[in-house]
Image 1 (tube, helix red, strand yellow):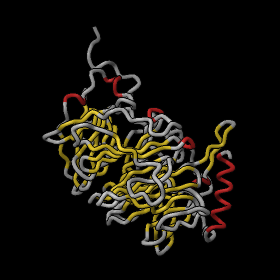
Image 2 (image 1 turned 135 degrees about the vertical axis):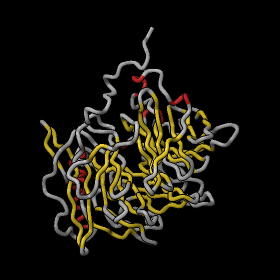
Image 3 (image 1 turned 180 degrees about the vertical axis):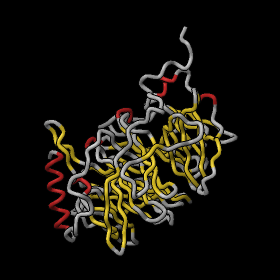
Image 4 (image 1 turned 30 degrees about the horizontal axis):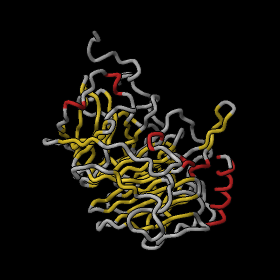
Length: 398
């Protein structure tokens, strides 16, 4: 089944599986963009928007009423590479001169520099390509980052651990050829891999152990609380603290949502599609769970791309608003480009932001019981920023 057929079938089945959509939330036509967006992180009175496309800044900012994202200004950084949410604020990682710098901002807006090891600073600026650039790791504990196969705890007293190679747990795919998502819970590092129709997996490693060894958490039998069933692509690893871990997996209409409790046991909340759905929660619509996120009160939400945004209830998903995020298209040459929602962010006042490929950020707000939305496009990379493709060496080569 090609992607266009899937979209048409999705729209039909969503309409038959739940109530018909009300008035459209967005204009019929929204602008195509070369750049795509990834994370949307609640920040101040809006969200931070991340993109790894050279057409836009790596980290941007947007309020609900904005038509376009704006650059993020962090003291001393010429280029902000990455941002992550922490339990009490946000952390930025970027380039200052010829050094990597990390700055933490508290919920009250106070900023302070975080000590980083000398090994973080590249010998040559061209070493800072996306594949080798250090990135922050989502964590509820201390500030942490990963550079290549080394994990660093960044603070006044920092330390590091080098990760061993990941075993080929499943003969169908090689972890080296797959995208990854990470989360650090205390000293337990979780990694999820995704490779579309070729599947994915979830694994963890105890970084406090004398000998580091990966633990395979995927492909467990139904009811086995030591991990999760299936080998589907892992899209989200998320936590609200206290030892709880939430993992979402998805491919086309098949979706999974799993929870690790503070005692270390895994529970299946959703596993399957509408016809073969298993688990404690019910999502009676066709299509995937693209990601999960939390608001400032700790309530969990799910982005179900073909159906809309839902809040997680005790026994079912409660619809916030219904919208088919895959329905937006643009013609580029001989091809039609379809939107693909990837991430969800909820601002302090309850505004909903959804990142997409090639269609910017879609923002939604409720007023008098009615939801409405609009598109926020991405700003072009400013000339004040460094172009990582044309930077000279940071020292003369002999």
